[in-house]
Length: 206
Ligand SMILES: C[S@@+](CC[C@H](N)C(=O)[O-])C[C@H]1O[C@@H](n2cnc3c(N)ncnc32)[C@H](O)[C@@H]1O
Image (cartoon, rainbow, N blue to C red; front, side, top):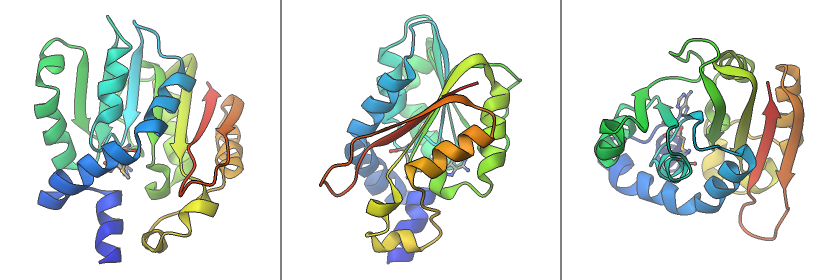
C-alpha cells in the first residue's frame, strides 16, 4: 500500500489519481501554493511555467493574478493533463492557460520563453536534479525568477511512504544546488513550525 501511495504521489494516474490524489493534493498544498506565488512576484502580463501541476490548484490561483499573461503547465502524468484540460477548458479557449504533457528533464519550449517558473512538491522525483535546473534556466528569460517549493527532509522522513523512491532535501541543499546551477540571489523562505510539515520556497534569479 505504501509503495502504491508513493507511486501515486510521484505520478497520479487512473481512478485513484483522479478521484483521490488530485483533490487531496489541492487541499494539502493550498498554503504552499499561495506562498510560492507570492514569493515569485507574478505580474499580470507574465509568461509563467509550472512543472508538475498535479490537481491544478496553482494554475487556477496563478491565472487569477494575471490578465494578458499566460500560465503554462507541464506534467508527465497524462491523466493529470487530461483532467486539467477539462477543468480549465474556458481559460484555455481564452488563451490564458496552457497545459501539456512534459518532463522537467526535457522541456518542450524555446529558450527564454518565461518570466517566471515554479514547481511544487516535485523535486523529490526528478531523476537528475541538475538537468532539471538547467532546463528551467534555459527556458527562463534573463532576470527571470524560479521558485522551487517543497517540504523539508526532517519532516518528510517521518512519513513511511517517502522511503519509496523519494529523494528528500534540506532547504539549504536545494539552495546550494540552485546556486551550482547558476541561479543568483538564491533565498530560502522557511518558518519552521510544529505542524506535520512546513512550507518551504527556495527562490532564485537567472
Ligand atoms: C506530489 S504531486 C504535486 C502536485 C502539485 N504540484 C502540488 O503540490 O499539489 C507531483 C506532480 O509532479 C508530477 N511530476 C513528477 N515528476 C515529474 C517530472 N519529472 N516532470 C514533470 N512532472 C512531474 C507528477 O505527475 C505529479 O502531478
